[in-house]
Image 1 (cartoon, rainbow, N blue to C red):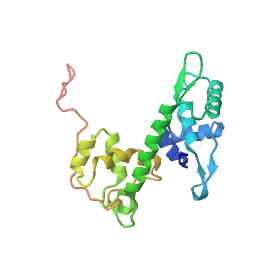
Image 2 (tube, rainbow, N blue to C red):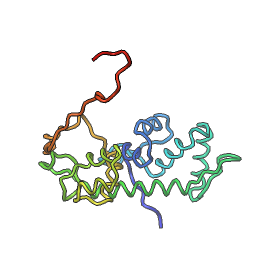
Image 3 (cartoon, rainbow, N blue to C red):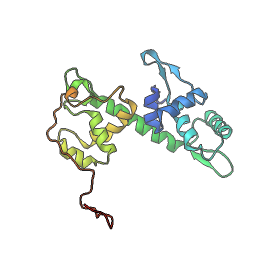
Image 4 (cartoon, one colour):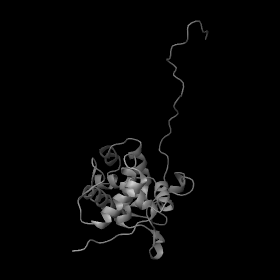
Amino acid sequence: MASTSHAYTPTEAAAVSEITVESVHSATDKRIIETHLVGSRGRSLTDEDLLRLKLWYGVGSILSAERRKRLFDTIEQNPDAETVRADDYLIIDVAWAREQLAARAEALREAERMIENVKGVVGGEPVFKRTRVPVRTIAAMKTQGASTAEIVKGYPSLTERMVDLAEIWVAAHPARGRPKKLSEQGLKVKSVKHLSLRNENASKPSGSTS
């Protein structure tokens, strides 16, 4: 049975391929991939485009641009091949790359089903359905080092899966404009701490006076 083809915006393609959106645009400019007009979504990329992106930047430090283009030609001629020989010493695991992309693409689609924008709820910020928890807040906490378990403990309305999906959704939907203040999101500051940047206990240089 033929697999279903999906369309991705440049930012979605970047999130799924784990590269920057600037790299996606660079690949388009260099005609490594070609975008396609798909209805109201505008310029979109296909699953095969994502495979090219992942391989182009994944082996960029090993293969020249010309050899990478020949690699793509070989893959196109052998679409069902699980591995492709790039040279005498390098074999590319194409099946593994496809599996990685498919898993991240499905994670993004799952995140899309969990997240919504509701006018009047947290200032219209994207939130997890049936909660008032902003998705970008959770993604920022993950980026800053908070564990999934710590976040779920602080936000019991979330599941571990919701927390894990926050980062890929935010990567695919970067915020535009200045960050909204808490008051604009319908949130309130519960406490404020003032931290001194000066170490009061640091020893003074010898010979210094107070």
